[in-house]
Image (cartoon, rainbow, N blue to C red; front, top):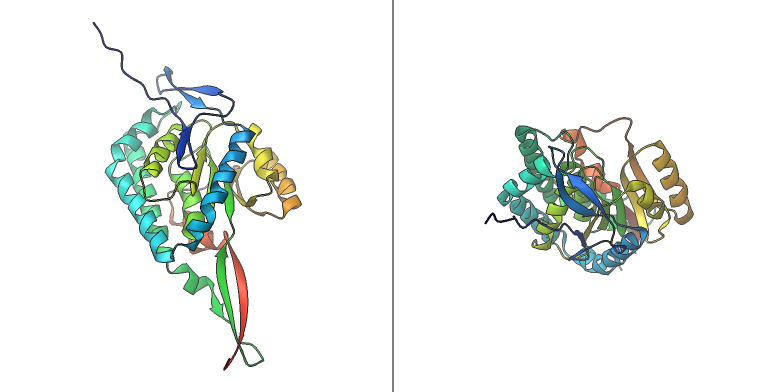
Length: 292
């Protein structure tokens, strides 16, 4: 008798756990040949709110960790991806792309993803020295400027480079002590599903990175108006950018959005920078009298 293979039931990774959509809705994902591959959770605004709550719980503990420890954890996550390249290769090639990348391009994306995590792991205990400062003042005081994480960052991943772009967006945010709620690529969500499985077994505390799947038209308005999201980033079209900026103005969110009309080369060195970290920190100035 022919044995039927046991297929995976994809779930999103929120608060350190794998969950289905709160509504129970899914949308079908097809493989490169156009055949049914899996049902992907169609997350709702309620799922987004739950993810923000999970990120809020994880935030204080993650922010209090030493910069060196955060760097170690991010570096270790890169090591895990290196060891599971085959799983991510399958996800990139099979996971729902109508025109999937060639094996060479997919392997290049995995390699670039690993290198990007290593890059930000290296900055974890160094960005403070570059972005902070000792300020000259015309009084007998020491005046210091230091950085602090903003809190919870909402991110919108683009359709292209579904693995590399997603990691390139959340890595700088968590490097400086923020927590993240990210919406994965709608057309190619499967790499984010597999990445969530790796996050679950990494040293990264549950709730630091929360990955959602679903349709942008349903989720973007809640990203824009949720008052506990302190910053918004990622890639958006003109209508989405207008919605996000208008919603962000009500709660004074920081907004850094790339336009879909001018695609980013996620493989280039310009897609990684110290200034990507700076976009997700706040600056605090402290005065201290000399001799006290």
